[in-house]
Length: 164
Image (cartoon, rainbow, N blue to C red; front, side, top):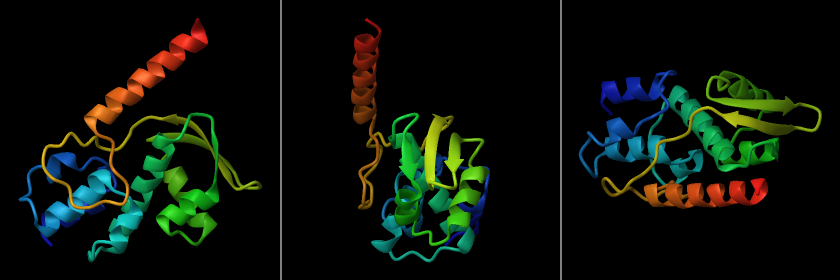
């Protein structure tokens, strides 16, 4: 794998990979790995035989945590087990450390006694797939532009129903 791609994937300040994915040729290893980092989840690694460094695996686990939280409702309590299963994390302290490291992107309350995470606010989200080029197979279909519009319309009607 290209050293510049490794640097991008290991950079702790980068959480959006779509711009890099769009620049690489279709069908290459870079295309595959960048599509997972832009739109996929940690469990997508099991279907793709990719050789990742420990830093890359940790980064993808964190991106998966962001996906789960952004896909969930605000103020909902999610058990640690959901995150640990999705990210294949075996140690609770690792999950808690990731949540603390992700505080610039997501706000949450950690209940260590009940082992739940309460979502307060998602300050950033994952990349949005708009059918720019074909994606390798992913375990979960990423949010597309049309899906985002549909979700926003549902959100708008729910707000109107709740307010009126």
